[in-house]
Image 1 (tube, rainbow, N blue to C red):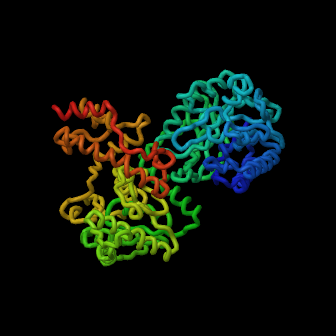
Image 2: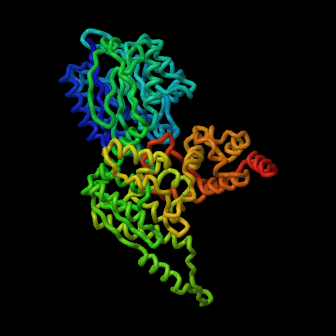
Image 3: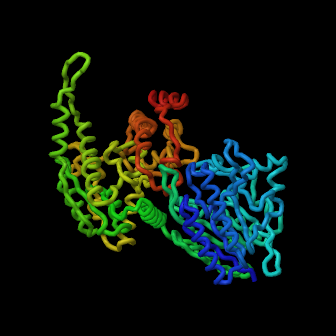
Length: 629
C-alpha cells in the first residue's frame, strides 16, 4: 500500500542552506514513519519572494548544490520538492540565464523524468503576474519553452511514472498556479486529467489571503472529484516579502480524496508531517467545515506575521504609542500577546488637546496588559518648536530682507504628530532596544489621513491592511477569545475615533475624524480591493441608480444619512478621490512595510504611479446631470 507524506515546512526566503536542512530532517521523519513518498512545497529550497536575488548566478549555483543534497538523500524514498532549475546554456528574454520554477522528483539518488519533458523535472506552466506575483520577470514558463521547441504545452506536460516496491504509479505534478487556470487559455489540470493518473500533487508557495482557503477547497475538491483520484496540496509556512508588503504563508496543506472531500488538513502556521495510505483515502471521513469567523484567521495571520517579522529583524522588544483610541489599543493588545508585556513599552504622549477621557483610557489599557508604561507630555516641546519656527528670521540671501514663518493650526497639528513619532517614540525605541510601531488602519492609509514622519512612521504597519470595522472586530475577538477578559477597554471601543490634534476633535463633545467609517471603509475598499476597481464614474452610476450601498456592501441608508443632496455626495467623493490618487500615494510610498491579509494590500500588491487625480468624460457628464436636477 502506497503511503504518501505531506511535509509542511517553514521556508526561509533566500536561505537554501536552512531550508535544505529542514527538508533533510523531514525526509528522515517520513522514512521513519514508513512513507514511500514525501512531498515538499514549491520553491522549498530557495524561497519564493526574493526580489532580484534571482539575478545572482552564485545564489543559483548554491540552490543547485543544495538540490543535489536532497536528491542524494532519496534512498528508498521518493522525494518531491520545489527548486529553481537553471539551463546555463540558454537565456531568458531579459538576456540573463534561463531559470524555471521547477518540480523535482528524486528516488534512490536519481531524478525521475516526466514522460515527455526535455528536462528531468516538471516546469511551471502558468506564470502569475498580478498582485504580489512577478513570475514572468524571472522565470521561463512551459508555454514559452513549447514555442521555442516548436511544439505545444500539451505535448510537453506529462505525468511522472513512479516505480515503488514493484508497482507503477502515475502522478500528475502541478505547481501552484497550474491548479488555478480559470482565467488562462490553457488548463494544465485538464490536460493531465486525460492521462489516467493515480493521484495529483500540487506543490505551492501560496501566501495567506482572507477567504483563499475556502475557495481553494472548492476548486481543488472539484478537480479531485471530476478526475476521480486523490489530490495532495502542499504549501509552506513562514514569512516572505517583496519589500513594501509582507506576506504570511499559512500552510493549511490539504489532502482531497477521489470524492473531492477534504480528508486531512495540516495546521495553520505550524510545521507538520502527515502520512496517508493512498488506497484508504476514499473511505476516510470528510473533515467538518470550519465555522470560525474571518477575524480568527486574521488574528492568527497578524500574530504570526508580527512574530516572524521581529525575529527577522532580531528585535525582541517593541515600543508603541497609545492615544486612548481603538487603533493603538488593538495594536497594543496584539503586540503584548506576541512579544510579552515585559518586552512592550507603551507611551502616552498627551498635548493640551488630549482629554482626560482618553488619557484615562490609555492608563486603563496599560494596566490591563501589565506592560511597561510611560507618560511623556509633548505640549512644551511642540510650543518650543512653534516658537522657534515663528521667531527665527528667514533671510532672503539675495536681497538681505527678513521675514518670519507663520505656523497655522493645521501645521501645528502636524508638528504634534511628528514630535510624538520622530522625537519621543524614536528615542524611546532606541533607548529601550526595540522598534516602534505604525498603528495606521487601511482607511487612513487609503486617503493619507496621517502625517509624514509622524504617525505614519514605524518599522511595521501591522494593521494597515485592516479596515476600521475589522479593527473593531479584532478588539472584540481579543477580549472575548484571545485574552478571555476585557483588555481593550469598552470605553475605547465606544468612544468616537479622533486624532485629538485640535479643539475641533474634542472627543468629549463627540467630535472626531472626518472619515465616516461605516460608509467610507466600504467606499475606499471599492477603490482598492475590487478586482475591477471602482472609480468615481462607477460610484456616480450607482448613486444615480440608487444602488450605492448594495454595490459597496455597506449598511442601507447611509448615503441619505450622510449626504442629503447630490452636491454633498459628489463633494465628499471628490475630496477622498483627490487624496487617494494624490498626496496619499506619496505617503504610501514612504510608509513602513504593510502586513498583508486582504485580497489587495498596499505596497507591491497595489502598484501605483504619482499621476494625480483623473475624472473620466462619463463621470463629468454624470456630475453635470446630477447637479442640474
